[in-house]
Image (cartoon, rainbow, N blue to C red; front, top):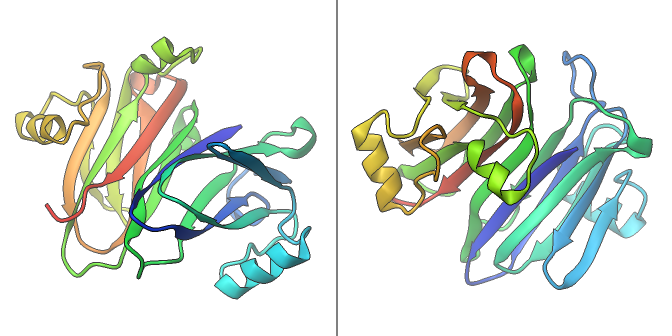
Length: 243
């Protein structure tokens, strides 16, 4: 099961498309054959989707976005949400398992709202089984201050069993080039000062944090365990706007 959280900031509702991808992940072994997605909304009914074409009205709206899933077994939800915090959970139909992808697209860049935070909680393995969070910055001409965090030890206090003991974090550009890496968030005093000033310093000294001014483009944050450690980890991305 993969858990994706996101926060909408601003003063207006945002039009989003959520996708749960599995079968179309080419070149990746052991993909999730039939994803099922649930969107949890505070004080509102949960939205569940198995196959994105199940509901004709939803299917038409999803097709109109131009980014409908390419496999009929994949999931998608077209929704407009008020500012606030939300959670999307992806699991395998009939308790199946495999590698899956949760995506959130902001389809309303002109309104005074944006995805201010995205996060993914999942089991961090080794090799290619680490947790990868991708994000795209757009809608601005200059740099945005982005803060990425790799959380593990502090999940234990939240009741998460088997938390990742010592996360490491890498930030890479759209070509896969390494921009910056971090083991413990206090390793770099300048970075630590930025994280603290933003109110986003991790609560455990073993957790990771990166602050970077980034131009528009595609990026990935890679969460792994120090010395091939494994466990449940959380990778978070915060868009803090103009530095």
